[in-house]
Image 1: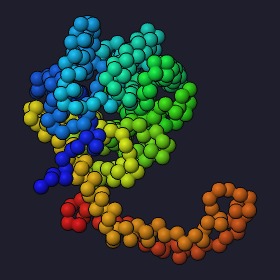
Image 2 (image 1 turned 60 degrees about the horizontal axis):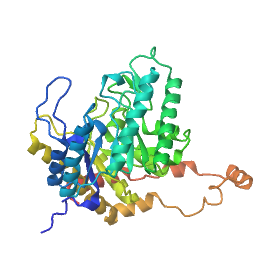
Image 3 (image 1 turned 90 degrees about the vertical axis):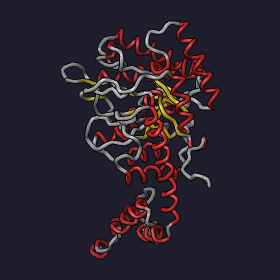
Length: 389
């Protein structure tokens, strides 16, 4: 019997080298797993059933590696991709790990750091293009401050814009065809990071020289860290035509970045997110930017990866049940009922419509007295998730 929750290439499930490659280090403890080589992680992901693998430049080629070391690593990595059939849909740059980026990269007060960040990113774009990536993500890990005494935020915004504009031109000049995806986060590792939410980046994109080339890469944990509803950020990005990539994980609200397995904490929110992505026909990667628990060995890491994908597919199937449930759909039709009586007064503005609407009488008490049955809808969602419906 076919396992309905077995990942397939058409599901486009991807993981970063930094996710399954996490050695379990945290601020209070040393690594618990021995580091694996990038090509070993490709084989691990293939065994787990993934479609693709993504990377920061330093995940694949260690910072400061020689040309010969680079070529040797790339040869083995490419062979692993060929052996497994995995692809590289996305690449990004580590602009936060090395001490040179302690005050940021594109927003650093030091012009030499800003120039080096551009150089490092261009070289990483070259690497991503060589391996077939079509999306390039920018996460401003240290683009922020720990004290507002340190930096003028207007200057920082201008510096960041200048950098993205420069790299857009490089993308055009090289013919890479990358779609840039900006990733927001409110804090950590800086006290405050610039562009803390997806909405902030959506506003910023319209100020760029090539806004058509740039979208967003919203992450579950990052919006939850700010106490926000992730689905709403994704919906806004989708409606704007800017959902170029997405990072799936899980997170308890308003804590440090936990990066837990997808669906590990907030199943109902994960359900409505999956339902949204499937309903609108999102065609990009379902990228899991998460880490296995520190308690796990590499068999546990494979369990983690399989769990991310399996949970997504279970929730996808439950979304189909929601969409096919006659009682749920009947309630939705009822609460969204529109007899067309307001069409002459709403929609595109005209002076005549405005005058007619101003003179229209509403029975506000009658309208306000209507029950919307959202309690029932929410309970039916619970019952879908609990498997009794």
